[in-house]
Image 1 (cartoon, rainbow, N blue to C red):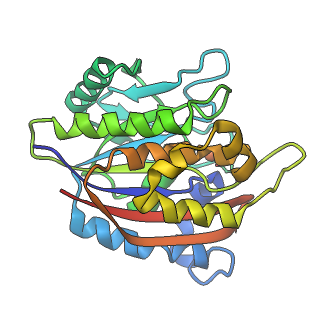
Image 2: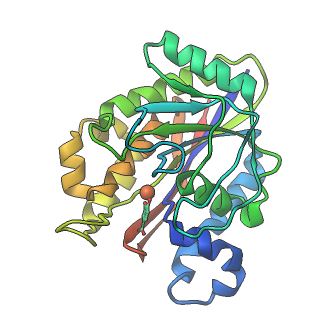
Length: 282
Ligand code: DHB
Ligand code: FE
C-alpha cells in the first residue's frame, strides 16, 4: 500500500528562484546564508526517506489560472508539468514528471468524498510549485520523483477556509493510503509565512503568530484550522493567507507526527520564511 512518510513546508518567494542557481556562492552572503543553511537537514531527511511521489500543495499566482476563472481546488493529471515565467524573471527549469494513475485515483477519491475538483490534464506550474522543488531537491535533482500538483486558490476571495483546507488534506491522506501500490509519498505545503505585498500594510510581518503556527501545526493543527479567513489575513497579512496550504498538507498526515527540523527567518524579500520537516509514522 502507499504510505505517507512525511510533510514538508517552505516559503516559495520568487526571488529564491533567482538565487537557487547561485546557492553555493551565496552560502556566505549575510542575506542568504540564514535562509539556505536551513535546507541542509531537510535534504538529508529526503536522502534517507527516498519518496517516490511528491504531492505538492501550492497556489497558482496567475500563470495557469487567472481572475477570469479561478478554481478553488485544482489537481493535475498530466504526464509532465512545465514552468514558465509568470513575470518574476525566474529561469525555466527542467520539467517535472507526473503520475497520472495516482492523480486520477486522487481525483476520483476526492470527488467521491464530496470535494469538487477541477481536473487538469494540462497544467503549467508557477513559483509556488517550482521554488520549493528546487529548494528541497538541490540543483533540480527531482528527476526521480513523480509529482502531483494540488492547487488551492489564495488569490481571489473567497478563499477556502482553513477548516476546509485541513479537511481536504485529510481526504487526500485517505485517498493516498487507499492506493494499492507500494509507493512512498511526501506531501509539500508551500507559501507563507506572514507577508503582505501591497496596500496599507505592505511589508507587514508577524513573528509571534508565525512561531505559534509552527508550534501548533505539529500536534494541535485543529486549533489552527479553527481560524477564520479574516482572522488569518489579520494575523498573517493578505498573502500570509497562504498558510492554508500548510494546513492542507498537515491534514494529510494521519499517523504519529514528529518534527524533525524547522527554520524560521525574517526576511527574504517582504516575507517571513518558514521551513518544516514533519515525519509521519504509521
Ligand atoms: C513574494 C512572496 C510570495 O509568496 C509571492 O508569491 C510573491 C512574492 C515576496 O515576498 O516577494
Ligand atoms: Fe506566494
